[in-house]
Length: 427
Image 1 (cartoon, one colour):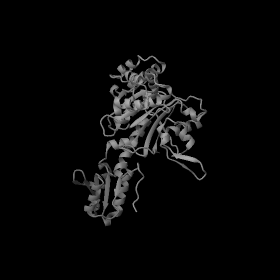
Image 2 (tube, rainbow, N blue to C red):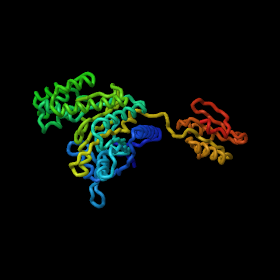
Image 3 (spheres, helix red, strand yellow):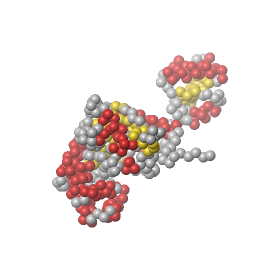
């Protein structure tokens, strides 16, 4: 009988899991450097909690895995970390010190399309600040994303826009209120399908030709970030002006935080999921990669936390989520296939001494694997080579008599006699 993995899932062998752990360690290190603290929430959530924030406009609401438990309670697997955060913050609303800065990493599930870099079971790595108004908190997330990419040696560009700017564009173009969402969704596809693709979708949705042309006249601005902002500033409605002021503030603070100006691109056509965003929105993409989906994305959601409290209280919040699987896919496979740095090979008569040596190395912080199956030297070398373990320690009877071992450097192909007393310092 053949047992297949569910579509959109995958097994990770050591060489893949090692890379994943390295990326997770990098993310955790950068997150904590910015003062974000770890939390953990359940994989299972109630259906009501899962849908309270999303609303009808969030695609994730249509991609949830749901089920009913033995008590006939409707539950689901979390599809992101933001709504569990909102729920938790509201449960602690009266005692939680704000701003509350947290990160959470782990698996999430969405029954959505499967393509390169996108799976149905995937890890998200979220960073959020609750209780800080627009400006510094948003810029800090952009600086954090840039630092993550720099430490992981990834070349990214962060696209920045604002929900208010999009509404201002729609108002100035004369888009009817009941068609604003569909117009924004069509506009968000501009980078993929171009102007003609957006035009065709809007024509199919019965938009008036003059509205479409007016929309293009406003939104298709070029130049530097400052030049794009100046061009859009000619639109005088309140949403546009408020959104541009917020954008300038975020860019200013990001620059003060050391983010190069060419690492952030103001992109007025970028929409992201607009079911709950209220201000700045952002996505990070590789500059040169076959992976075209965003490696990180987020934005401000000032009206979401209060949904879980009393439906009225405004609680400012902003966050960014990193797609771990997307980053790993873009990085490709690693040459490292084992966490072990040293492989200890005993002879039958030196097993006790070999185990003592292995444990001494471990006590000094060195990752050590020991031959457990009595391989001969040739097969032991083949084993170490297959896992790319850089050093093999051969514990031979004659070497033990001289209080030494033979160390094979697998990269250089060289052997060296090393005294047991100084062996830990050799690695």
